[in-house]
Length: 245
Image 1 (spheres, helix red, strand yellow):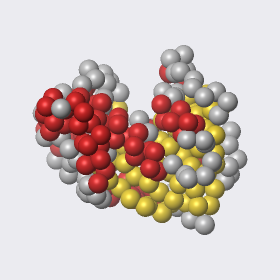
Image 2 (spheres, one colour):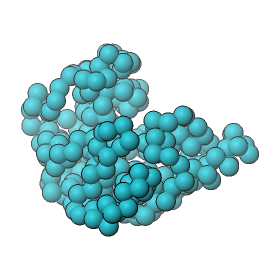
Image 3 (cartoon, rainbow, N blue to C red):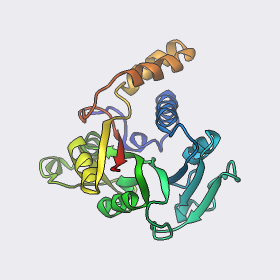
Image 4 (tube, rainbow, N blue to C red):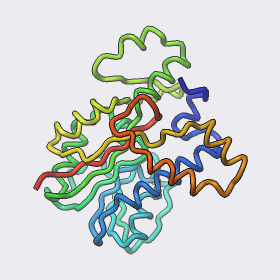
């Protein structure tokens, strides 16, 4: 179990060395994943702006779906390349209208009806288009339950694990097998599933405390590890999937 409190586990606590490392890994993963050619990318990551802005800087045109709760807080970067839309679903998009979809920031865990959401993603993707998604892992879910002394729930997770956060919100946590089933069930081909990070917070903190210049080395080390489908480590899982055709 992870020896850090729940409010730190989803990145909402005080930003420390580990979260600096985590976000650097996420940015580099996205950089490597983005299409090589200029494309139309749909960002479902909640309206924070970071991921759409990174894609826009790489030459892509971005449609960013904004979370109503964040609409007044989100910063708009690269306005000429980013179209920002407030919507509850993807009904405003026609079939096969985007080349890629990014659902960072645990988007499919916050959306409890993940099956419906990912089917909509598959609908709007063009044949050959790809989706990058990030979800909460079972490791995270069990850590939260244990911290709240919900020990009985750890033995009764069932097929769908819905976990209450201390703030009253609910997160849906996935094993790698469940995430694969979710994507395949929507008609997508899974390219890979892996933990976002396998290096522990204590390891990252120790290395960066010894040498602040080691961040790039840590990120490179993380991304050269290939623990595909390993859901025994890491608080978040990341998956890449492709639409057939």
